[in-house]
Length: 67
Image (tube, rainbow, N blue to C red; front, side, top):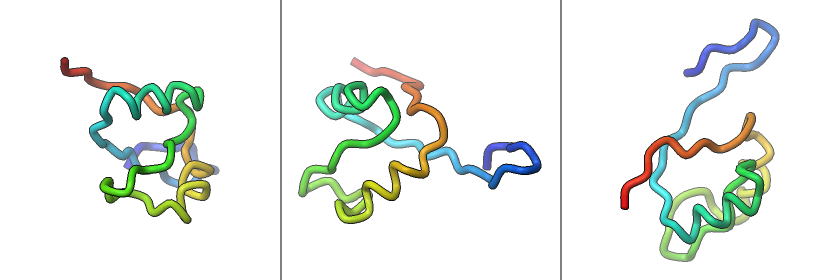
């Protein structure tokens, strides 16, 4: 859990690997949401993605890059 101000609900930091093509799509969304997943990627179901993205606080942050 990430500390928050007393009047804000708690937040959770999520970590996940992202390939270069998907990272480009996140960049196109101004680092504020995840693009739809490919069928072989089990993560947030497509029908829940808009709601998931609506709850992102701030911008998505690139923490590490491996080439």
